[in-house]
Image (cartoon, rainbow, N blue to C red; front, side, top):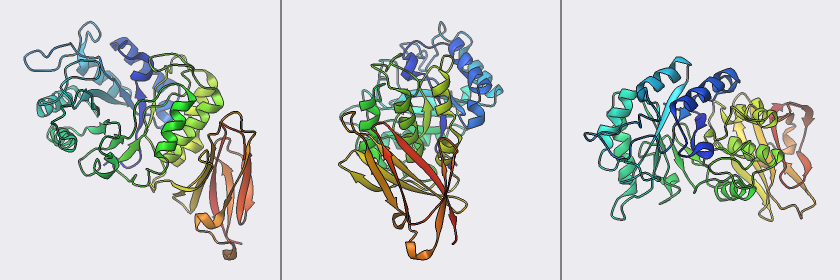
Length: 375
């Protein structure tokens, strides 16, 4: 059973089709040596373009030029570092990049993945037949994975088709992509946040809304790089994903990541909210003009978190934002206050009663963890 949302790294955002065995091993080493593993990132996931263009004797085969020692050897290497191995396939008759896919081959492919030691399967939705049934396709792969002899996490990626929040959990998925692909520009992560911020209350242990992989630290480079974002925008993006409980899957080349964005990806306070053992979803408290959001989230150990996000434009000179503790279930007449800690900086703000306010410019956020304190 997968309780909290998963964390890891995926090859697609930076490398696209330019992947190979050496790269994946180097990334694996960096996850361990640079503190990502200790922070909770545990999956190393190869995305599309890893196989030959055609099946061999009915089986998927890793491209021997890219992966000369084969997937089992790579899996063994990743496992030897204490990490988990993720791979990619698709519910359609071809993958998004035109490689052989698992439509009609679900059970044999699942057995192949299990033999390779796969722990996580990203299951895409390109080239899916018009006559096909999406719900049954994901159920079929879920059953194939359960029959494979190995526990393999199913990361469904159907981009929100047929509102997967209503059925993916029941069909056996551990997460489900709710949107189209993310790109390395502020508008992309903002649009995803706005579209999903009120669609995450169904998150629960075992299945989470996946808002796509992180673009933190890409700065316009790589496969989904366009104009890039500022460091402040990357922090806001990461805080959004962490607070809403989306899987945290790094998309940047962590071998070359700058210090500021490495620090963002390792923010202990934000990760603690994301990985809180109570696994309760966030909820929207309020929004102003559709661009300023306040959210709450109940945490374990007598705590609560709340967040302010300003996703307005640079023409906005900033906005006073506030929250009444009544909206967190703490009435002023109760005499109960909140001892507040900044989840980003770790700063202790002291005890507050009744409410809290802050002024945020566009692209800024503030995330606070409060411990209930009796008067």
